[in-house]
Amino acid sequence: MDNEEHFRKLERMYLGAPVNRYYLPTIRIGPGSAEIAVQVRSDFFHAAHAVHGVVYFKVLDDAAFFAANSLVEDVFVLTVSLNVYLTRPITEGAIVATGRVVHTSRRLIIAEAEAVDGEGRTLARGTASFMRSNIALTPEIGYR
Image (cartoon, rainbow, N blue to C red):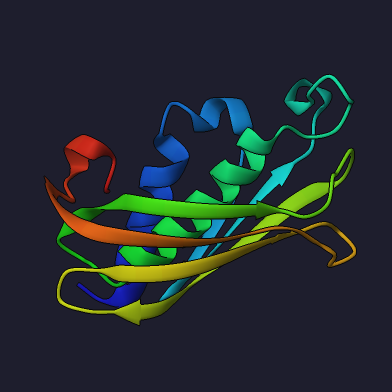
């Protein structure tokens, strides 16, 4: 399989996940990288009327995860850890998270992710580690 086919299959798997019916993200995957975008909606807000941290966590994890899985063509990777720094609130527009792999070894993949607003201001940053699972990338999990 060529890399582009793998990337598109991962994108379809991501967009088909039930949780994404709620967030309605977009995704674009490349070699060792991924970009996730989510439009801000008021139902993402906490009591102070800005996007809740769970949305930041999701886009950072997703961007880092798919950057990592772009390098693994046979199995699903698993998030081992994700450290998140929330730096700025957002109340409108889009959150765009970009993930990129910064280290690979036989057992571990480390990726960084940054979420920005429409003006390019950093909203959050994260560093994550991933490991290979025993879950094969198959049509049964949406990898088509």
